[in-house]
Image (cartoon, rainbow, N blue to C red; front, side, top):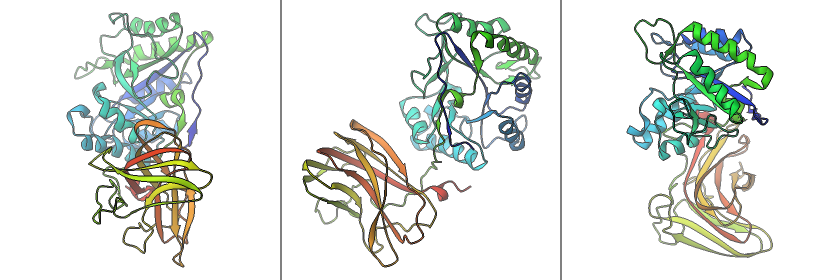
Length: 418
């Protein structure tokens, strides 16, 4: 799998069409063949749990689509109305579907909301599950749509986790309708037009509301091929969005930290149990156990008022074994936290070697200042063979304030295991 793709840049008036096929339906092999015959590739949003069921693509067929150059995207485990579920159940549906598809060997960066159903919580969870984008159902202007809606999504999109479409193609959608989706985008300055298909059959038995006749789809892609001369091309969702292939995130996560939400402080010294307030160098600082928490009742805040060297940080306590996770050599570890800060901050990592000494290991990239709690994560390099225990946390090395809460640490390889 390619780790990174480069996002497409559009010229004025240029249109990109992304042909999407939802639900992993067996008839979609007809669509794939039609696209391939014209040098085009589509994005197929599948459910990891439904491959091989009656009327669905098999795992072998989905792998064949990938091998032919099509994109495979995530669409949840079971196609629920996500907003009717608890946040944790949404995480299971979204995160674990992506983990399963990654384990099957697919590059999975694009997500499609079942039924287009989402709210702010769902959108945040899609981001936390490490998708690069998510597609809605609707939002673009159709023949009967409101004049306030655009004919195309801009590139980059207004919101990569709410990419708009004309809704799903139905049996009543004509070839002229499909052409007009593209023509109106061309005439209104260009942009991105994702088009969503489900069943490919005609006539369908039993009848299917969300369907298109194979002849109509073939005629449409034939027509699309003629638009290339004026700058209208076809690309997958991933090709338009671009970006790195992020690590898998399982739910519930394999939490390796004790007292990750910083709530427990049995001795009342202000420092959460199994954590330590650390730092080095020449700087003036103060620590606070604050009720300005992301979750629960307590968070930790450090303020540097003067600094000429060093840093200040909250890290997991560097003890013998009571609080320290034990690493597996060669495994990568993903630490995450919610933070807000008036200046840039970063994750730092340490390990205890075989002689019992703690040593600096690595650090993450600078994280930007944020005025409200923001989720951040970083994946370490492979754990060295001499590492016997881990210590990680957030640090600040400039004048400013860092408030942090709700940490998590997971073994990436263990989380990704089937």
